[in-house]
Length: 65
Image: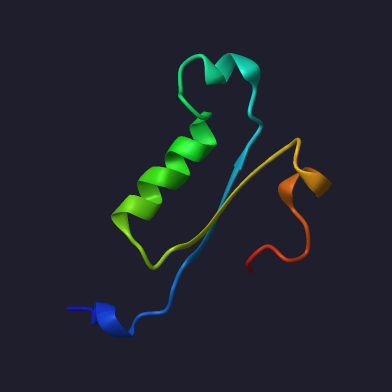
C-alpha cells in the first residue's frame, strides 16, 4: 500500500481550446470542468487550466514541469 502522506504532488496542466460552441454544453468550458473535478478528487494536485487564447497559448515557461 502506498503512503499517501509522503507522496509528491502531481503537476497537471489542462489545456483547452475553449471553443464557444463547447460553452453551450458546459458552464465554464470542458477544460475548466475537468480541472474542477480533478481538484475535487485530490487536493494535492498542482493544477493549471489554460487555453489557446491565454498569453503564449497557455504554455508560458512558468508552467509546471
